[in-house]
Length: 384
Ligand code: SAH
Image (cartoon, rainbow, N blue to C red; front, side, top):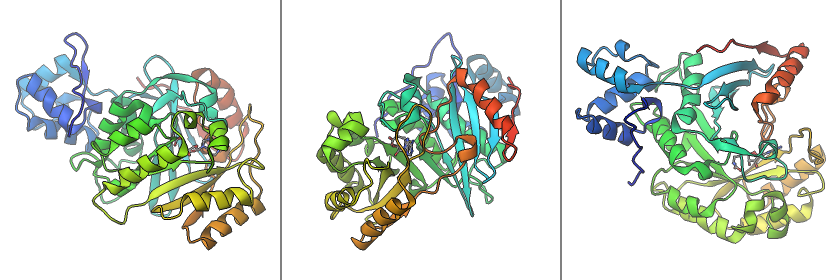
């Protein structure tokens, strides 16, 4: 497995939070220490939530001093924490440089799905996504990506593969396009699945992509997570409009690449998830459902229909309840497992495509939350 070696700076402290297990070994070797230290550190950080080397009791005093001089365990800073009346929880997290990202936890029975961001903003500019409207700021570091899981798990005292795991699933469906930040997303996902860290199974970690085909072609060399494709249209003309990256990598190429990805998975039962956001009068008619069924014939997949979530600056409307039902029934009739994603956390703007945690937006949004009597709002002072 090839992985780009991180550059360990001689002047800046290395943030160990985001190092994948392999990168952690490289780090210890680079400072002349035994590589078994790597798994000890990974455990301390991700299973015990420890960020001070002095609390790591099976590490010698000398090594703790050495680490303290050259390294650190630094998570991004939580600046606001909102709880929806339906139990959905959203953290607004400030990353270096001052911008904010959003991380959402969606509890559902004994499942807890954490929706993780991969970039500040997004460059793909899908016409129905509010993250795209704010433009692209920068890639998150691997520490900032895994830091979202670290923060959320710590909030429930549920780090590592504990019995009472609150976060059972992770989806890379927050802000950003994960395949546009390939190396950092891969390192973070490796930690999600690492036994010494969070120990999540590959079925419970999902990468969602709008279709960055050359990167998707490389993904199976590094991880074997579940894959979701943001399709939203089954013909190139419409998809070019909704998901502009389609002009570069059209549907046929994307579907080939996605199928090659799952074909390389050892588990024969694995299926793609096809995401399809239903927008009133745009892609929600029967002809669209028929086209979709035709495209997906013979593709091992399940379909997840997402009712469009409106946001200011968008003229699109959510498909009607009838249109959604008709669309779903048709696909089920054609033999596809088809679910409709229930919209969660609407009262805290935590639904798909509503994540837009630009820092200058915080005050206005926070005021709005306070005005909503039903939602519980907890603004936290920036800790450190
Ligand atoms: N960049 C990744 C992750 C995006 S968010 C991707 O494109 O897959 C996860 C899903 O929410 C995607 O399928 C995305 O297209 C969808 N989405 C974005 N904005 C939405 C909105 N306003 N309403 C409903 N779904 C939306």
